[in-house]
Length: 141
Image 1 (cartoon, rainbow, N blue to C red):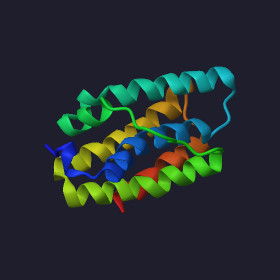
Image 2 (spheres, rainbow, N blue to C red):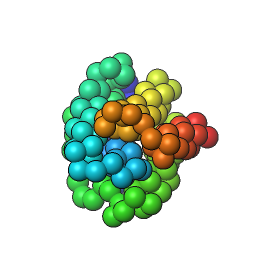
Image 3 (tube, helix red, strand yellow):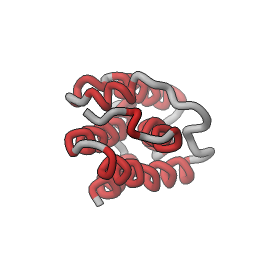
Image 4 (tube, rainbow, N blue to C red):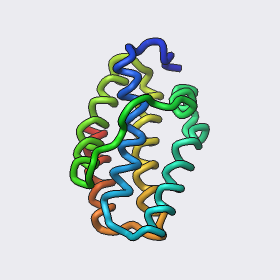
C-alpha cells in the first residue's frame, strides 16, 4: 500500500482534491436542472465514500479524509478544465511515489466518479460522455 505520509502536504492536497474536482466537473458537464443536479451530487457523494470497492487501502485512506480549501472551479468550463488538467498530474505523482496497484485503483476511482455522477440523473448525456472520454484519455496518457 502507498502510505499517505510519502506525500508532501501539497501533493496530498492534490490527491484529495482531484476526485472532488472530477465529481463537480461531471455535475457541470451538462445543465440538467435542479432535481437532476441534486441526484448527481448525491451519486458523487456516494461514490466518493465507497472506496472499499477498489481493493486499495490507499484509496480508502484518501476517501476517509476531507481536503482543505477550494476544490472546484467557478463555472462548467473551468471545472472541466481543472479536472482534466489535474487528474493526469495526480496520476503522474502516484506513478512516482505509489504502487502500480494504487495508481490503477486511483485512476479507476476517478473514472467511476465521473460515470456515476454523470448517470446520477438517470442517463449520461453526450456532453457527459465527452467529459468521461476525455478524462479517461487524460488519465491513461
